[in-house]
Length: 410
Image 1 (cartoon, rainbow, N blue to C red):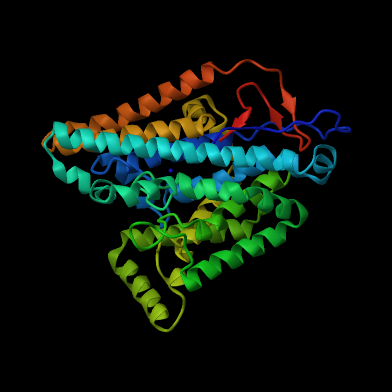
Image 2 (image 1 turned 135 degrees about the vertical axis):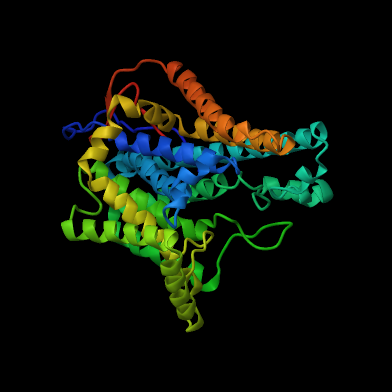
């Protein structure tokens, strides 16, 4: 599902700032890759969707989205919330920019929702496919507009493929408190996030849907754990450290778990045995979010898989070199314009869904439209990047350097 664009923080008059460190190219490169995978997965029926992360792991690009969102929030905003910054500029000077970004995400979500309704409405008329008006949770919009329109504004009625930003917006609203806790006691933030995730799974805690029953598909009470882990990673990066140190045993254990998951998914007999054992654990009383692959509550297999994969990738020097190379420049470009690219990709993907539904016999569309969509995303990102004014380098109190082409983390 990428991401808001935030300026790194710099305060005048700070005493002897630490040595400057260049921005980690992996942040933008992996964000850009996640944006491409989200876009491809949002165009069902295309052959490229078999190449995205969800086919090889229990996770998908959404988990990566939330980890990098937390990381970006820490890099962008924690400098305003340090004790020194709060003493000099006040607490609200650090809180208000985060809340402003949360509001921006809300507006972006409403914008995409309106376009989703318009695209599917147009498609239903152009292709004479009234069934389009009953897909992606649109039925309530047309059969019960009084309640569903209120639900859209209140974020309690979310359309399919347009439902990730509400959770991110909610988490950003609470991000100042999380950052303050993480700056004070990083382990306290981790244990608090783990406790909230566990409680959400045990008691099925979720924000309500309305007018439909149930809760949010991306439940922020559960997904906050990934956001917090990303945030702790970002806070450690500002200190020039790793949140989880490099460890050979942990690396091989993580790589082994990733290999186990691949076998789990691609060897039917092996996968059936593990799934059966997990079902037995559930029947024995082990909570469902520890024994299933549930996405709403970020079930344990999904959680462990994305964390293991992230750790393995973070330990490989070849990955770091590639992300900083010219070959990865398109990925970095997409990542640097995360929110704009995500919104563009979502709207284009919905349009492609309608076009493919109206032309079911045109097999070439599955092959041709997704690459066209990626090109559109790249063009939009390039246009936005080229409009940014050239500024001199700015260093934050945490030592991060924001170069003219790196001043936003989204």
